[in-house]
Image (cartoon, rainbow, N blue to C red; front, side, top):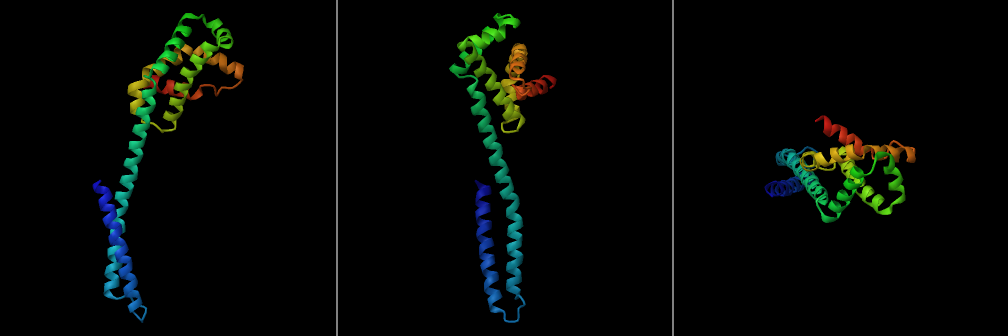
Amino acid sequence: MIKFSVILISLALFLISLIYIGFFNNECNSGDLSIGANIATIMATSIALITLPFIYIQIRDNKIQQKRERSYNFTGKYHTPDYLDFIGKTRLFLNNTPKEQQMLKFDNDFEIRKNVVATFSYFEETATMYNMDLIDKEIVKLTLKLPIIFYFDLGKDLIYAMRRVAKSEEVYNQWETLHDNLKCN
């Protein structure tokens, strides 16, 4: 709040200085600036130079705060009853279904597909936001590092099968990139 007050006061003084410069410019017939106008010019420039770092700091702090809030809101979704249900059912499916039959069951059972897609898409969205630096990386590392690594390792065969069917390496690619980065660190 103090930074905002300093910015407002500095901007007000800057505007007063500009008005002061204009007043003295109109008073001079020779085209030369008077001493008062020179002082006002120096004052306006000084105020602008003082204010700019505060404006930068305020913008930076706002971006950091927004990123943290987005991170807390997004990682908090992982612990909601709906996601816990999707994740639990996905884990049961991946643990109890032989790898050769996973894709077949995934294709033929709507309930399994819904749970797996919800779980995998959550991790893919988390990874995309993480890789684009839209959420706080430390918060993700603290809250989701183990689930991101665990579920990718658990569902890797199914993901590779999905890529073969889609004929695209982009299927859950962001998640794999994040998985590899977190596993190395």
